[in-house]
Image (tube, rainbow, N blue to C red; front, top):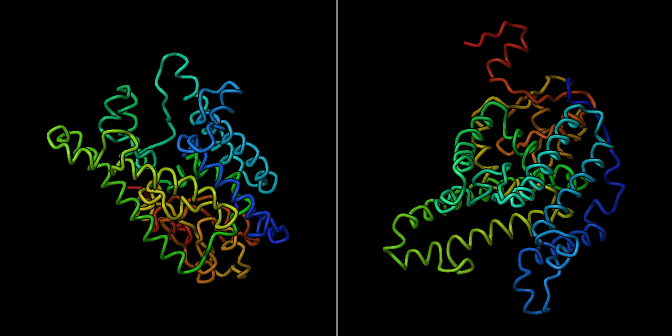
Length: 376
């Protein structure tokens, strides 16, 4: 199966903490509480007269609670990656994917942003693009960034990301680069089977993720307009950007609801109850943006006809809630905007029915028929 080795049946359902049992609920509660303290520590200080995460960060030599979070994030990804590869490391695709994802997070998501301020440089995150890093295309953000990074984030967000998704699928980012996907790939893997495959969940996903993308586009456009005319229209400026960072403005509400609650509290806190891709599947504007390019691009999952035995492994372990088995049963190769190309469906298939490909549909049809393929 090329780089995608098979693993067959696993013992997932024998472990109560992986099936919404008491253990899973307790882990979920712990994660939610952690994110609430992380995001709202300043408000919590008024109640308990202390900043627990800030004090912990400073006690271990880190500048603030966000660096403590970044360090913890990397540790969880490394440990989760080791746990993942212990089960699925017989696949070279998994080995490469997890190794790259963890390396990118450690180097570009933690070490580089930590080191650059030590040399009087800005704190920059090269592994994130708009609209996931929602403020990277705000005019005042671009104005404050070094020219090289401003050009990098504009070209990366608007050119590199969609072009790469067209040719290689959104997996190049969602499963190889992105820190959100990285945590889901590694630390969240024990709960991947909990992602709902129901039609209701699919309908919610299609509505919610594009609504968030639309709000991201609207917010960016409004903040850009405020940059141009806000000084002449104080009411408009107050509604869009606010006078202070925590004013109830459009910019603040987007950061609060999408950047904090959906991405952190819900997106990660509900891993043990709803699966590890709650954020990626239902709310991530970057996933929606890249998914559109993927839908019209070259990436697809090829189904070898006449081989599916309907075991259901592929659907069970799809972290994006895609009913892969239905496509395999009908001998139908497919492209889904939600697919992050983790390769698990191919990995757990006992007969090697599935394969991830980056060729056009016409080329794939000719290859199956043994005909010569010409790239004109």
